[in-house]
Length: 278
Ligand SMILES: NC(=O)c1ccc[n+]([C@@H]2O[C@H](COP(=O)([O-])OP(=O)(O)OC[C@H]3O[C@@H](n4cnc5c(N)ncnc54)[C@H](OP(=O)(O)O)[C@@H]3O)[C@@H](O)[C@H]2O)c1
Image (cartoon, rainbow, N blue to C red):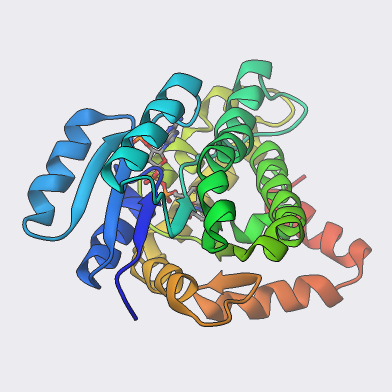
């Protein structure tokens, strides 16, 4: 297998950063992108001789997307990417009844609209060549909707739907669309989601449930693995001769999705309500 030309969004921390180093370590040429230049410089320094090129890319900024696409085209002599990894994303947890409109739109901007716009920028070169892969980092919550994470779950459900659709739309052009669905992974994610529900702490209706839930989420994150299993899954999606449509990662989480699928909805509702104390 020859080294591929790969671009990954959200490579300034967590899964994206780890995956950039991991894939470059396997001999792929990696454009590691993000919106924080200091973090990108640090990544380049840590990469040493590994084939990593840092590029600024804010997935919410059209000009930034166009500039990154132009740089990739120039640096690859018009070839473009073999693999685009849409990883940038974040979650803000909280009850749907209280979620702030800007907060809700922000998550959709980054996790859904940003992902589509970045894909639109890099897809034409793949289609023209008749080869390429788009790997979308979704989540297990793209398959199950957890309580007190409604908006974040909705963004990942949207990513799943868009990926299923796109996979069928571009397969005829030799382009594969693959979903990677992480379970709980230790990264910066928990500090932007689980533990940051304090705005709802004093709500007379949801406050107690939110406080308990945030505590539980943070406790679970302490036992969660780091990003390595996800990097390995992404590497599989990059290299597999016939990649699957979706990879649950780490793979032991597939059992949870299986039970959620066969569990009667009434029972699932009762369990979720009990866990959240609602
Ligand atoms: N950790 C988990 O438990 C978990 C589980 C399932 C799915 N996921 C998904 O995995 C992906 C990576 O998350 P992570 O766990 O690695 O969290 P993380 O450590 O917080 O990393 C998120 C990355 O996304 C970047 N990002 C956010 N908004 C962006 C924007 N507008 N433009 C460009 N980059 C942006 C962040 O950049 P900054 O450094 O500038 O903030 C950061 O590099 C996300 O899509 C997340 O939804 C995570």
